[in-house]
Each structure stands twice: as C-alpha cells, then as structure tokens.
Length: 388
Ligand code: XIL
Image (cartoon, rainbow, N blue to C red; front, top):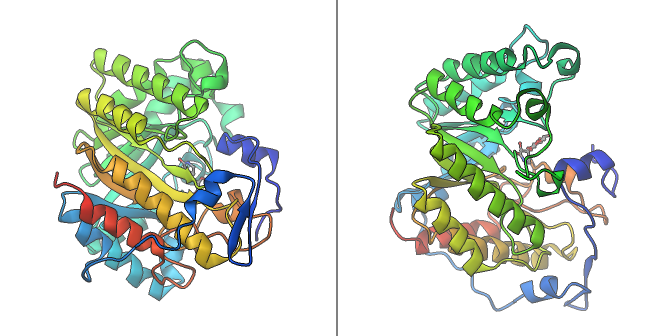
C-alpha cells in the first residue's frame, strides 16, 4: 500500500524535510531538470565495472570493514531468494523496526521480543553480526506513553527499558544506537537539542543517562550516537554537524561511555551539497575524539530523478560511489550498513514515493534481487578503500 504523494505532514515532519522541489524527466535520452545537480549526475560514460566475484561483505571484510543491512523477519520468511541474497552479501543484520519501542512495547508492562529474538537467532545461525537500533528516539514513542510517563517516573521508565532490552542481548550485540537523532538545529534551543518527551522530562542529561544505562547492561557492545541529515554542505546539515560535534565532546568530557558516531546517510540525489573537503574534515574531527564512525542507514533518495530506470540507476550509483569514496577514506569508518538491501523492501516506498508513481530504486539490489549499478558502486568503493 503506497501512500499518496505529496508526503503527509507527518511524513515530512518525520523526515525533517521541507520543500523538496523540482523534478526530473528524460526526453529523447536527455535529462531535463531545472536542478542542475540532477543533470550533472548523469554520465553515460562513467565506468561502474567491478573486478572479481566477491560479495559485498567479502570486499568490505578484506579491508577490515563490516557491510550489512537493515531487515525485518517477514522479508526472509516470505521470500527464499531474498534470504539467499542477504546471506551472500551481508555480514551484519540490523532490525529495521523490531527493536524500537513501538514494536517492543505494545503495553506499558509488556515486552514483545519475538521478532528481535528471531533476527538475533538468524544472525547467530548464519555467523552474522547483530546490531541494535534504537533505545532512545523522539520519533519512536508508543501510544500509551503520554498516559503513563511523567516527570516523576521518566528516569525509571527509560532506565528500565534500556536495561531490559540491552541485557537480553548482552554480549551478542556488536553495537547499539543508544540515542537516535537528538539534535535539531531548528528547535530554537541554544544547545540545538531536538524536542522530545525525554528532554522535557529529564533535561539534556537524558542522553548521558541512556549511555550509562546501556553500558551497565551490556558492557561489551559498542555504544553509538546516531544522527541524520549531516552529510551535505547545506546550512541545516552544517548546523547539525556543529551541534553533533559539540554534543560528542561534552559527553566525552563527562566520561560518558560512548564509542562511535553513526551517520545515517539517507543521501539526497537531487542535492547539490556533497562537499568532500568539508565532509572529510568532519569525519577527521570525530575520529580525533577517539570515536569510531559507522555509516548506519545508507540509501539514495531517487524521488526527483528521471523516470527511466537505467538513467536513474546510473545516477543513484554515482551518488553511492561519490559519497563512499569520501567517507571510506577515513579509517575510523568501520562499517557501512544500507537501510535495506533490495528495492522490494524499502521505507522510501511509503516515506519518499515518487510523484509519477514509479517504484523507487534506492538500494543495491532491484525488486527481484538482481544487482544494480548501485551494487557495483558500493563494491568499487570497498575495493578502493584502504585497509583498517
Ligand atoms: C524507518 C523504517 O525504515 C520504517 O519502516 C518505519 O516505518 C519508520 O522508521 N531514520 C531512522 C530509522 O533512524 O529508524 C527510520 O526507519 C528511517 C529514518
């Protein structure tokens, strides 16, 4: 079921996007778009050749990098070919939704671990790493929350949740996105923190509290602060990068157990702002704090690209390779996770649909699990990366 375009107010708010403008079309083989960035992306000569037969996980692993993807149990259960593709390419599983509050906590006193446990067992059975997303997110608040949580009990509710969930997978989790998207440069606050019930009830220290509770419950997991829309050279992203660095510095100063920054990387193909120098400098700044970096939710928004899928795939592949060649140059980047593996299962279908109704094509494999140029682009970026 695809929601209607344009996006609902909820979806726009969810994405923190506004004013996605312009659209592209191909006329007689030529890309026509008011957005020159979209036109510049189309290079029919660009070479996406890959050498050898290795899978993405093998290419990544040979450089000391992890490759994996987000998934839900039902994708595997309903689709054997998908399962085979996933096992071939991915070395890590990230539950796309199964570890979120809204899924785990159908009622205040109840936890439902069925799906997250299933994925944990699947990962273990196939020798894959397992990764947790996410323990605290302002956008992931169950319906019962408002009636139940208040200033008096918020700390206990948060710590109980974190302790119960992270203890269950203690020693088995590669890493946890402890806090997701805590920054919003447009919140009007001097610390640029995102408004959320946790911030309202507990103040800015809820972030540190969450990290400490996770470390206590699972001392072995790598603890990650995960942030979105910080990739491009546009004012909003720049402001978020600045605020993110400040947040990380402050957390570290207080001795908070935090080990890495997650950069979601939902890349906007129509956006002009990839600035390799600035992005590279940001990554160096993060690395110099002693933190690792994970690319946690990589995919390419093709909403405003031409309808023609061959043209579109070529553009999407360019965005992947251009971005990954910058970020993988930083040795602190230890993992690349795409937010899905195949275009059959992508959140863009409902959150970022195209106005022409054509299926979106944001991921390395197509709807039928065949490799696209995006797969080649990722493979090439791993092949060109330096060893960690
Ligand atoms: C998305 C999932 O992909 C959707 O299936 C779900 O309906 C909403 O959440 N940033 C995040 C992810 O941190 O948790 C979001 O995942 C995508 C944006």
